[in-house]
Every structure is written in C-alpha cells, then in structure tokens.
Image (cartoon, rainbow, N blue to C red; front, side, top):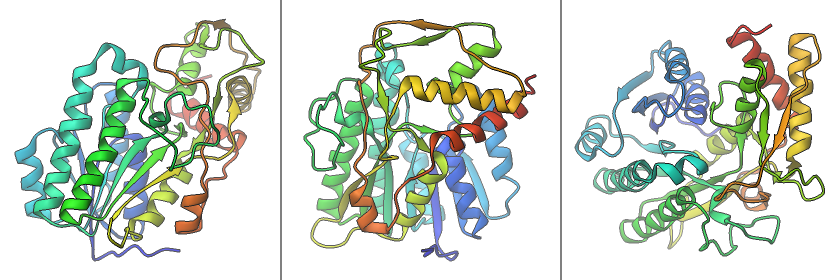
Length: 339
C-alpha cells in the first residue's frame, strides 16, 4: 500500500532525530523530496544526530535546514520557499523525567514550536499535517488497552501535558482553518540508532561502563511495569501509510495509537536485551541491577489498542522484542566498537 507521491514535497521536523531519520530515509529511498529541519540540540549525544544527518545528506533529494521550530519567522520563510505538501512534525523536547527539572524547554519546543507549525500550515495550506503525540497522554489510566476514545485529561508529567495540548491545538486549527491533521500516540519506540535517553540504551551504556542499571519498579516482580515496546520500522510503516490518508469530512482531525498491542514486563524486556547483547558479543551478558521506587511522572503500564490504525490503513505493528532488540544490540556493539 504505497501511495507516496515523488512529486510532492515532504517537510519533516526533527529529521536528525530517531524516528525522523528513519522516516526521512524511507521517503528518500522512494525518490521523494524531503526538507529536513532540526535544531541539533545537545539533549543527548549530538554526534549520533550528526551520524544520522550525514547519512541523509548522501541523498540528492534531501535538503537540510538547521533551525528551531520555536523561531516563527524562519519557519514561515521555509514554508514560503519550499511550499511543502505534507508536513510531519516530529521535533519536540522528549522525555518524561527531564521535564521535571527543565520545564521551560518543553513549553518552547512542544507548545510554541508546534503553534508555529500550525500557523505555517494555515498560511501556506498543506495536504496533510501529521504530528507526534505520545502514549503519555493516557496518564495513569487503569483501563487497558488504551483506546483513542479514552479520557486523557489527567496527565502526570509536563511532557504529557504538552502532547495533550498539541492534540487540542491541532483539533482547533483543523476545525477553524480546515487543515487535515493526524496525531500519532507513539508507544515506547526502540531500535538501532535510537535515543540514548531511553532505558534500553542506558542499560547498555551502564553495562559497558561497569555500572549497575537502575530499575524503577521497587523490585516488585508480581506488579512489574508493563510497556508496549514498538520497533522503529513499525512506527515508520504506520506513518508512511497515513501520510496519504488525510482525514476527510467535517472535522479533518484524527488521532491514532501506534503501539505493539503486546505489552511486555520490564524484566522480560531486560532479559531479552541481555540475551541480544550476549549474541552480539559472543559471550554472556548479565546486568547488575538496583531496584528503586517508581519516578514521579512515570506510568505503571502502557498498552495500545491499535484497531483504529488497522481499520484506517490495514496495518498494525508486530515486530517481536527479541527480533527488534537483536537489531539494536548488533548496531550498538558495531557503532560503539564494543568487545
């Protein structure tokens, strides 16, 4: 089901980020023109961002612009010059725990920045705006799996509050200015070239640094944290299918979960990562573990219902964690030259 149009211009914010890189690459591999925006901030190792960016810059149809989406004049100028047909907003300040200590940057990027994207789409009309929301909007909801129709007015982190705000802002702009917009609630995305602030990446870093890993579940294995871990290729496939499937009708705004619909206990995920690193290194890997209380803002479980996505585009993520984590481990060991 490939309806990408090489004659259209795709603008991707956060293009040097984890999901942004893989989406840009997939579009470029199909001969689409991609305008990539990223501020290349140092929230995590900027060298990894440049590694991704350098790979994208080998494509003739890729244009990179270093800027921050909170810079309204620059964003409007980019829209005026390149007139994108489809916009994918993946630029955001990520991370639940970081938002507790650094709230300002979340408002700047996730609220002001997204407002600027909406304003640009209003002034220079687009075929479709797709933007990243997050599973964190479900807060501490007890009902599982999470469905798009669930009540999501009780965020437990500022990050989650900004993502819920994005959905409300997009809904309003879609209603007022007929901007076709789709929000995507991502569920714990992982894979090669992923974000170093994510737990699986940090666990690997700690192991090779000879340090224990911290597990925020109080050592309660019966009531362990559950996460819907979603492999990056599945996320990109879902986005790609939705790009040419813009909402129609009176309200041109939709929200979809993109998750694996198969939550795993955190301890199972950790055991699978140990095995994947063992395979990659050819020797046994066991993490030293320290158990600590759950961090404020973290939620005990994420579990996506993906029925809406499946109905819309005939796809649901299915990559099992042993396969996805093996690809991550193989990349990690090779990229960082671990032995």
